[in-house]
Image (cartoon, rainbow over all chains, first blue to last red; front, side, top):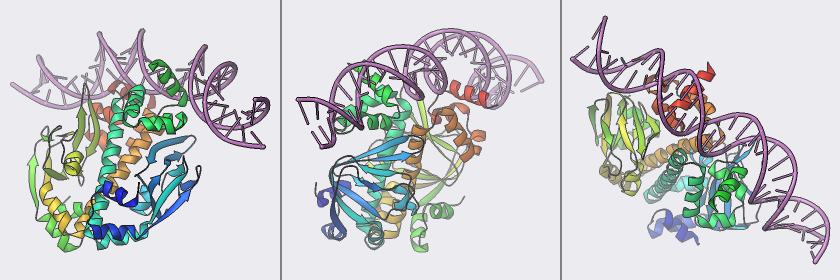
Length: 186
Length: 186
DNA sequence: AGCTTTTTTTATCATTTGTTAATTTTTTTC
DNA sequence: GAAAAAAATTAACAAATGATAAAAAAAGCT
């Protein structure tokens, strides 16, 4: 998925504004296993995924995966981006990736200069917010096997591309519980 | 809390832009129990809480409270606001409230006209996103009694102002479980 | 292909949370 | 302030999920 498509998918932009964003983007390729963003660090870039798959996780005694990003999605440390404070998430590449890199510094400048880009940034946050809110509500309404079925329905390809330990963590259960749920569904 | 304060708390605005927003706001007072926003309906207003307390809930077989709003906070149906689609949440006043009302139509117009207001709207969504993300992660990391202790620590006044059934629902557990947790903590 | 490592499944038992119903406490109403 | 209604607690049992360990299956490596 190319950068123009990715930007438009978030929110349509006039050609001029889109070019302003595109001019600040550089393309990079990184290997599976690479750590793209580190927890407890102020990150100065955001990324758009051209190709590949990543996950965001938080580490305490265990590791909790709370987001997967695939083609077309945006990789961002929200705390760094919004509050210029160290973020809580680590981003790991689950596949070899091709990424578009954008310095948050440059993005901030564009936000202040171009009302279309400011509204594009607003739409981005708003849409992410709805997705996160829906997940929170789903977590409150549904038990683990319902959430698993929902994920199978909404993102079946994830189950092919991601190992089950990460899926379990994303669903908020242990890997053993997920295995049990899968066995019961057969 | 007056409107100028509320707007600034979200993100600082130049005087001119702030006045533009304030000019579109009208003040209303509504009684406890009033339903401010309805699920499955495209809502055309957002509200800022001058005084009082509200909750957002989703209804299926049971009722799940997923947000409390108090003085200074913004009441909004995200789906209506972002996608102009019927929202999933109902907003009920838990106390008599004084509110500032703002038509989303007018807000949208301001977003397109004033880059400061567009960035103010962006900041609003971004901050809400971080709060929601943190709750999602907390839900994944912590068990019910840890989440209860966290709520007591972060929002002790809620426990005085909200009945425990709603708190339990917010924490994602039954009222009976919450009672049990409270009994164990004594 | 064969060996090694990693991932997934299965089994058992422990813990947490849910369900239902009865009881007590608090709040509301007249 | 007494009666009624609503909210909160307690108890007993059921169901879901967690923890640990062992076995099986799959993936990676040379």
